Image (spheres, rainbow over the protein chains, first blue to last red):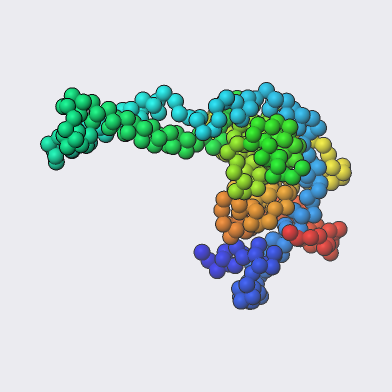
Length: 180
Length: 194
């Protein structure tokens, strides 16, 4: 970036009086020895005065037509309310997919858990191992093991999926797709 | 009623409260849309589109910025989408300043001057036009503009510089600019600068 460009990019700061004193002094020195930048500064000030001075008339030219606000409000009347769902926010977003996902995850975790437990302890699961310690019949031991494990992990997975479904935000600015 | 309360009520689906916000801000959004689209009918439709999008997503407004900043963000998003769509259209004739026949005139003798300045602003690239609009028409501070556009204050200031440079290139030979540049020859001597 040339010195002149760097100096000119400070014009807005100088105009609003936020240029630090040392930079202000350096800028003034540059303007004294650079007629092109001196001219650019005068142009810049003139443009700033012009934009402020012509503001009211520009706003008049760009004024919104009467009735536009009513037209917008009519259009909004025809829109579904942002809270159209009868369900409270806490339960929105948990659909069949989340439930199916939670049970798929449960099954996978149970299989992996059973396999690892069998690998290390020679038994299918924690409850089977406990059943053996408590001396319950083998068929009860198996049901106890698998049932309790599935239930425990199922609720855990469902809880995790519910949280993720609630945290999932739709698009920030949904578009109607209408042609205007 | 405070704006914060209106927003809270709007978030829970209160259309009347949202209507108050519409009445407060529609003129600003329309102004930006008109500078962007250069056509009053399309600007009206676009303004409506912005407020419909805002109504649909108002429950997600968390008050981390001002409501106008958020609304202007929606306007910018839709404007960018419109620009992309327009880019895909081929052979479309751009609407020029001459097409603004239905605009309400300011004082008749000033119309040409004002329209020349408006034309210069509309011809700016959108990121430069936005800073001019927000600074000079909406009179937001640099900090507020930075918040609206999501950029540092320094960027706002440098964009203002480049915007004015482009306006100067367009109007350097125009009588309006010469009156402000050489005030001893004409009327506006001590206008406020910023």
